[in-house]
Length: 199
Image (cartoon, rainbow, N blue to C red; front, side, top):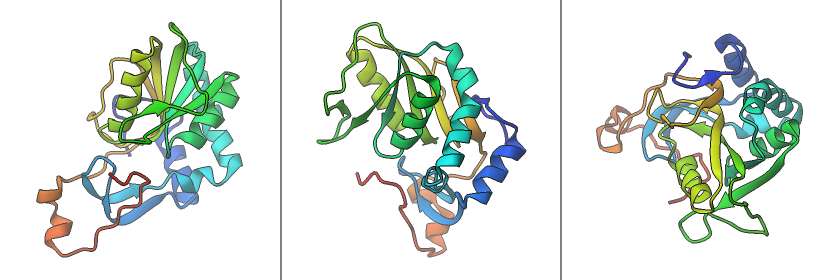
């Protein structure tokens, strides 16, 4: 593991030990939400099924996030919901999540952003940052301001480079392949799609 553009909340050794002890670092042949293929996958649900571990991760990231003075934490469903809640609880701010009921993100369930509110976007894992970028556009359309990004694992190696600051619990330099150029597919390895996004 190595640092990407994200500021790291803890040392790489501590982050890797946390991921491994929770069984969150998986090996095989995976299709990521971005459509890319990889022999590694970070199953952050394994971290978040342990509330003590989730609280420890949020506590480690909170000092950096606090500097951005967010009013609310917003996460993309489904993967970012638990982390976003825990981070918001630690920061003492509101929490909400965006959903894709018909293909594009929107706020539902009575969630509402006020013009000028300062928004911290929370996500479990980013590679290209597609989902969280969509949520950032939604935030801007509603007149609020994205002040930063907090992610458990930045595995993008610079593929996701927002103009706002980003903090990560862990940063991973892992191999990813376009689907039509994947050596795992060429070798006949069975493909698994472990994420929650179906489209």
